[in-house]
Image (cartoon, rainbow, N blue to C red; front, side, top):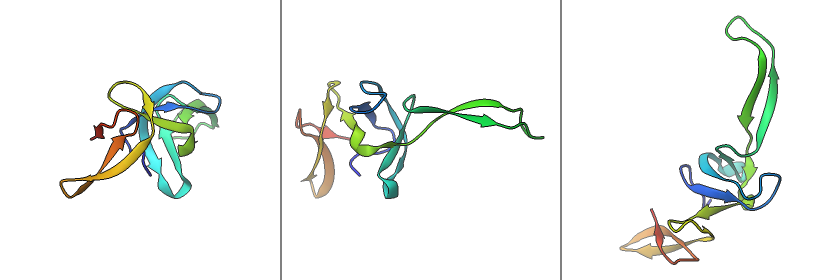
Length: 100
């Protein structure tokens, strides 16, 4: 996957189109990512001895094709790979800058 945990991304499709957030977790086998503040769902939780019940909100995974990486200049961009000093690094295709 070209998107990693900790990257800042912009949603380009779906009900949350236009929102930006940080990737909390990646699910590579399912091609999905969990983005902070995006795709909020609600779960009705019964009370237990350990916790009180109520409506719990959580971020659901979103497909990786519906997000684009935001580079240092703040623009959504595609991600490419190249070899620099014998190491494979990611770079922004829009600004041609290396992504750390």
